[in-house]
Length: 380
Ligand code: PMP
Ligand code: GLN
Image 1 (cartoon, helix red, strand yellow):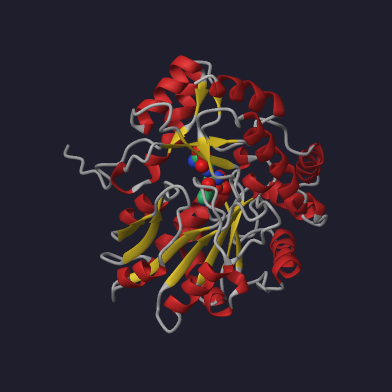
Image 2: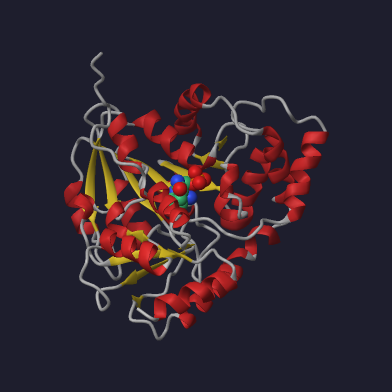
């Protein structure tokens, strides 16, 4: 039998590689992005109650109406932007499925999709699985700013989609209002669809406002917004997320969603709907994580790593060029195996694995874990 791979050059995701290495070498795992503390017990109780109350069969295909209403309310409250729960919101199995489904619903053979690198690692393979071509715009340390003139030059008649991600994984940068206005201006009057990956919308620091695509009317009219409850409520293993988009876009999304998963975990949807009623459950997250960022940066201040403080997400990008001239994959391998701290090499997200001597630490960890890790890192 001859098996022709659809993704012949694809390697195993760096998150699986680094977490396995961290486990094998018993290293402190600051690599894959997930909290090492419990999520709210009240939320777990709500899931249990939902199971006992009988929410154990298929949910409605686009998601339980309770949850779609709660998501809609959150958009109203936070951004004054309305998404109709009946036709403009779908609950997904994590943001990963929302991203996969949005790209699959839109991108056809030979379509071009503009992606800013470093980019979260599921975007490009999904574009390629659909026969599309990723047009990468490589950003550079330490600020990873976008030159919108360069973006304009990258747009061709084949450009079908532009993918943006703010707050940004892995750099911890955020888009300014000017960035969003530039994106809006560039796409206005075109047929370009925007995929705005906003999984870290509630993890944003130093009183900066999250610039959701829904705040910009023309941008909103052409955008899929993807979000993750795993990021928001400290339970990445639940794989719960959602997508919002104007009706016409959501109709296309749903066509793929219904045969991709049909519907997702029902009791968790009911629990999340209840939990979202109290806005403090998400509004206090920035303060909570800003404390962790500040603790980590203060513990690391005498290290030889160079930092620009993360502005959002739960990642801190770090320049290790004063410590080693190894490439970033070699450096994190040594760091994990010989020193006992695992991190992510940012080249994994770059075009052609460009090595800028940058790695990513996840600070969604207990204060004890951050303290132990920083002690080791400060000795390098
Ligand atoms: N987008 C970005 C930028 C991410 O960092 C992640 C990882 N959490 C996802 C999407 C996927 O989210 P989920 O775990 O909900 O699938
Ligand atoms: N989003 C997480 C990260 O960036 C990992 C998600 C995953 O492992 N697929 O580390």
